[in-house]
Structures are given as C-alpha cells and as structure tokens.
Image (cartoon, rainbow, N blue to C red; front, side, top):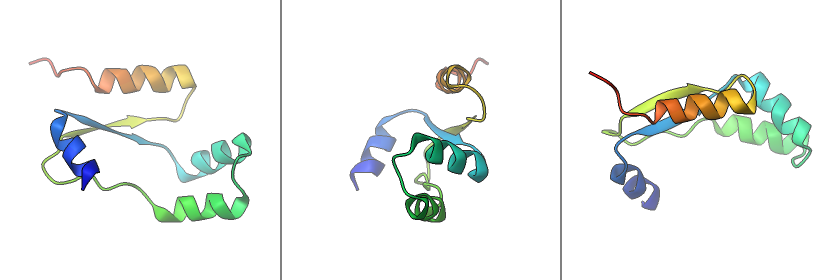
Length: 80
C-alpha cells in the first residue's frame, strides 16, 4: 500500500484528533457536505497507523493558529 510506504519513510507521524461533535460542527459550517455525507464521514472513524510508526497526537480543538502551532510542535525532535 502506498500510504504505508510513505509513512514508513517518515521518522514520525502526527495524528490530528478532535471531538466528533466539533468535527461535525466544523464540517457543517464549511457547507461543502450534506448532513448525510457528514454522518458517513464520522461513521468511517479514524485512520489506523501501521505498526512500527511512531505517532504523536495533536489535539485540534482551538483556532487554526493553535492547531498549526501544535502540529508543528509535534513534528519537532524530542529533546533528551
């Protein structure tokens, strides 16, 4: 699978998480998907990262600026 090969090529992956309620509200506010499409998207659940890939979670429950800052921080090397 191409996705797995790409993930194995990176040292660290980041998973972006937020509550289902917040995600539904954000998707509805965009106006690009119907209510049924949003329900289907939420029902699909989350992506499972292949075994052996280090991931760091990024909580995306604030502003765009906060989310970007948290995402960039998660990708930084861990200091010893």
